[in-house]
Image (cartoon, rainbow, N blue to C red; front, top):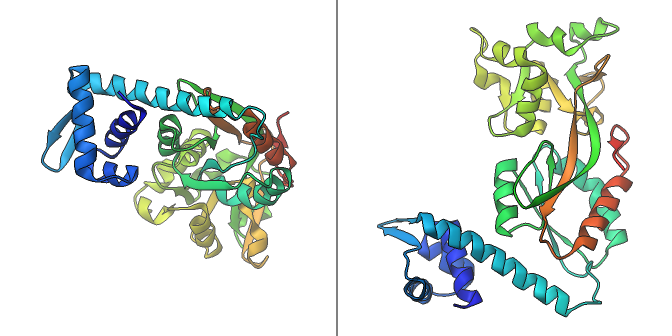
Length: 308
């Protein structure tokens, strides 16, 4: 049993395809297939069910692949220990961020982190929370920026800041004439939502369940009141289609003429989210996590409340 063989079975489990797994490992498919079969013969079990055009992992294979991933991570830790004394901020950091955080945090974070850790460039991926969680657990990402709650075995989280939600509406909207309003006042409005799969959509519906009922009501087709990104939703609000709830960092009305959009804060106990870092407990570069945290907290985002 070799580390390369363990890498190969992890790749096959991830790709569910021998050809794609071989490409990911930079070897030929026959070489990978022979190595996987050799490991199966050595262990005396079948790790994969092979069908034309499809590969699935057997129940015992799932357990072995999970353990193989741990072994590969520990091997990485050994390399880190062997370079003891070397700067943990020297080398790329693979960072994931959900779609509703990345575009608004990264413009502040990148220059701040570059000043603190100039030898630690970021390899960045934006995706859904569920996808980032899987890539984090597989070791494809080192750390991710997500919204709490987030609970995964073997993963540690660190709250960074609390971010209130705000209402974005056309400047001509009647709600602008009111001195104060609450989330409950939106039950008669056309509220634009992100599509399914975005955790921020779920957070909005948690504080405003009537927003979904209104979106799906007769005469208001749900597909006309959903957007694939917060930016798309902002454009639709600017065009007068409806109103929306956004994280304050994403409101950004300064990008449009003031005559098109207004940002309003909710009165009373405003809804909010907590943004956090998440990383594997076995990740061997704690100093990199600390530098990333410090850089985030140093970002000039006026509407958030840092959690120290």
